[in-house]
Image (cartoon, rainbow, N blue to C red):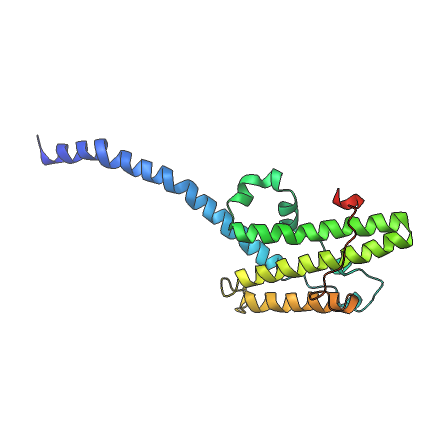
Length: 200
């Protein structure tokens, strides 16, 4: 048997099937990694647009959550995890956890305000203030954790470290919330023991 025939048989029997198996194993992993990286890039880009609205940041008539300038794609993905289960599970679990908790705080506090305005009673207003502070603490805490997670991990297109931009974002939100609820980080409100409509 010629050397050519031996090499050909070897390729057919061993190398080609092994190569296909390796390709079949790593290709989905590469695709998942590419999608994950693209989604994380979108998160960083959208976070750069999450600064509280300056023109209302010192207006006490606006609740702190109403200063969010717009809604975001990654917000909707984390608030609908059952529809994006596999994708969310492919992300860094710590990042996914803090993103979910951060956006859940916004969702819950919006329901708090809507219910309080619907009832219009002094008791409802008091409970709203308590929950505004508690969910502000949650928003602040998880936003801070996200900033810590991405410290030095990514850079924006202009070359500025995303961590510094995130710290600036975090500080702006702290200032806007602190203006409305002084000492909100240090003093947790004494919440009513009975579960309200939005907590059931």
